Image (cartoon, rainbow, N blue to C red; front, side):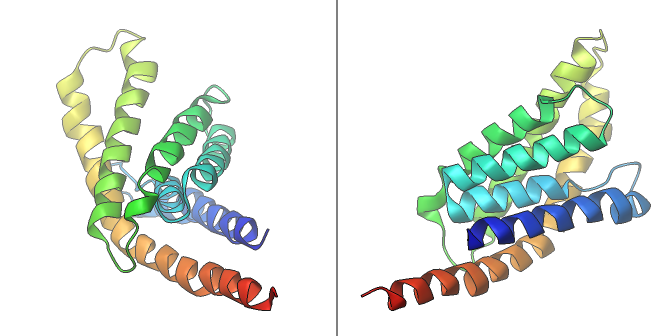
Length: 173
C-alpha cells in the first residue's frame, strides 16, 4: 500500500511537470517524456506487476490529457512497464547505465509505435523525416532528462520504499 502511494505521487508529479513545465522547455518542438521515465523506473526497480500498473496509469493519464484515442497509450505503456519489469533481477543500486539503456530502448519502441499508429496508417510514409526530426531527438532528450529524474526516483525507492519494507519485516515476529 505504501509503495502504491509513493508511485501515485511520482506519477502525478511527472504528469504535472510534463504538462505544465516542460512544454516551456521544448527544444526544436520536442519535450522529454517524463511518464516514460517513471514507467521504466517502476518496472526496473520494482518488477513486472508494479511496472505494468505504473505504465497503465501513466498511459491512461496521457490518453486523457492528449486528444488521441483512449487506451492506446495505456496499452503501450502497460507493455513497456511489463517488459522493463523483466529486468528487475538485474537491478543494482546506483547503476545508471542499464536503466538509461532500457529508457532509450523503451522510448524508441514507443516512438516507433506512435509513428505506425498515428502517421503510417494515415499514409505519411516519410520515415526518415520522422526519425531525424522526432524520434531520435525525443529519445535523446528523454534520456538526458532521465539521468536526473532516474537518480531522484532511485533515491525515493531506496530511502522510502526499501526502508519501509525493512521496518515491516523487523516488526514481524
